[in-house]
Length: 147
Ligand code: CA2
Image (spheres, helix red, strand yellow):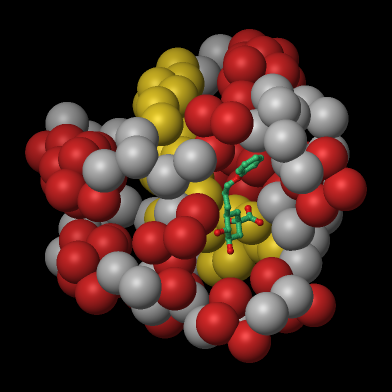
């Protein structure tokens, strides 16, 4: 099984600022935790981060074109602005789970709406970086049961 993990703008700064909201783990820590989960399922992980909306769109298309079994995406601020990412998720036949480290519903009103969520299999918010692991496990279990 092959899963793509996508991270949106500014998440390359994770663990380096705003620990009260996002914790102390860096994106590299998140990647390493996910590699341990993937190993248990003998699955392949493709972990990426971009500050550019179009690059995230291209990667979602790539996930479909190269027959990935699922995508975990933290679209970061593009969650609340991007019709392009909504359309990319809606236009591929790959299950996508949206993850947010913080509980966006406890924060500013502009973070309460997600353009992507209606096109996703599900959404995990507010469970810290553990949300990525839950999303990955869900996709891996789903993949196993459809073999
Ligand atoms: O809670 C999340 O995971 C978010 O997707 C994070 C985004 C934010 O715009 C969303 O509303 C919720 C922000 C990502 C930037 O992360 C930083 C972490 C540390 C230092 C600077 C930025």
